[in-house]
Length: 565
Image (tube, rainbow, N blue to C red; front, side):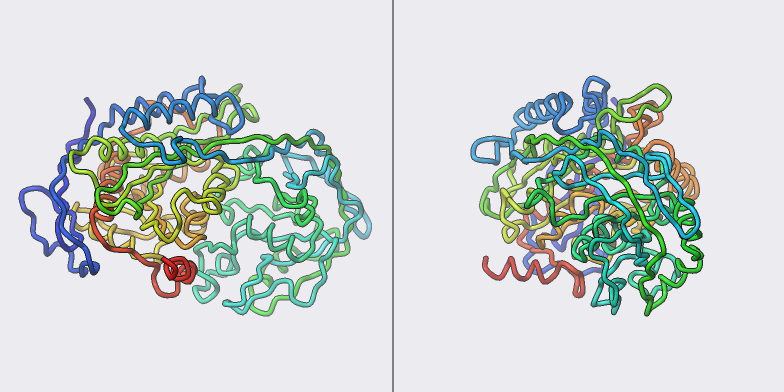
């Protein structure tokens, strides 16, 4: 058996402390206990790396075909999860069922065509997949742009709280906008601009597409830059070449831009030059306060053929009912899906998604096992959701946020498991998007009691907080957190750990290479599972309602939902 010797009993004690065995001193952390936190009994927990490995081996096998929603891989995955939930003692949470249906529409680009740009003195055409990546979210079988005027709108941001409006004084209705990825603070490094080098929601491409549509744009093209986007072009291309799933848009998507997508940075440079403009110069200006959008002397055309079909995917939901306050819910989550079959790489077309996100599903099942088998049931209910279609844009969790099994006002917190550490034990813990909620205080206490430190994100420019399912729950006010291992390897040090994470992103993330191999070390992942168990049990047995920090963008939503409780 491979269970690590760092996994052991936990003590649920007063003052929010998770104490090591043999009566370690409460003074390990000086942070005050939340009001209403009450003691709970000792519970023995064993996190099994063997069991986690078996779950991952199954879910990331070729037999499951990459677990894409709407495919035979979904059928096998959902059946497996329902079987596991039953075996672990979880009760069905959705009107006597473990299944929450999620209605979707799948749009397949059959003939993307070439993107053609007419400049002052020349015309250029660009290849789909290698130079451009375009699609539509409209239910339109022949979306097109025909000699569409082009406007450079900087970062494409309207943020009144930052005094920023890239669309001020320009009319982009019916036109195509070119947009930079990330935030103004990223390009300048100025900590006074947005969040400095750390990406905010305004830097994320879903926001940019949505804002351009609100402004009436017919086309939206984001300029890809690997460091600013957080991953290389190959990931952008591979992730979007496969048929895409969406929540069915209102009015067949007529309120959306007809064409959305990305262009390579070299393509953007050439387009700007054709318009008599310097890309680097305008990029720099776009990151300065007071920037004004620049109409480019260009006409852009592209046409595609699409097919679409409607289908139902599924969130899988189980619960351990609370012993005394069953209506109050602590919510664990992890997404079960990946990309399915896609563009072959070295002859392999199955995107198995071992790290993203079979590892986290395996971890959540271990958490569920602990709750389901415990002699003493939690005082609050503890629910477990395996979300669908995260890889398609957080769709399963967005649907749940709109159609909750447990109302946001009754949900104490969401602990989201995503891409657990696979490079062995680390000295540090990272809260993704730190500075948002009081859940971070729980992490700080756990880290101090377990000989670890909390450190900032290694790659804040990637905007990871806005890229996993906890964000959908935060958007309805639920304090939601993704806390994970950092990069300071116990065996090899911080530079090695950071290099491993970076290499995974460049070489394996969203590729067929994300497979369950002997290189994956689950000892660190098991520590993450232990942390989630400890923190969740404190919440489940306590009376605390963690809140968002003052100034967090979701605080008002929480206050509104809780006001009517």
